[in-house]
Image (cartoon, rainbow, N blue to C red):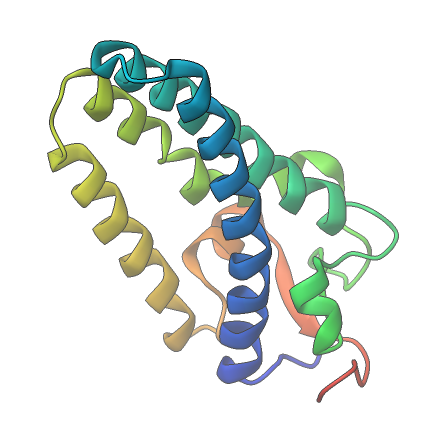
Length: 161
């Protein structure tokens, strides 16, 4: 298997992040509009929005990475694919398992309901720490790739690299 350069994974993640930021922004705006000017309702509604957003982010990754494309749009730009140990298309369950860092966002919901931002900050720090594991061996695999037994491989030229 040929592994991508670290910067390809980084830029692919940034592309997906921009796409998902837009989705999350729209969902939050819709939920905030539902709460109106009631601050106690806003807290609960934004906690519900965070749950919906977590589901959308996980669904986005699982849908694309377990599909015949084997890649999110960001990964497709660089010709990257998510594959199993043999380089084949990954099954749904391991791809879902690979999304565990994004499930940490549920802790932000608990923090929002408890009126504390400490859990949100800890989640952000944990996700940043997990993100930087792709700089470490073996073979540039992030910790969530390793725990799911999957690989992000260079499978083609892609649109940019």
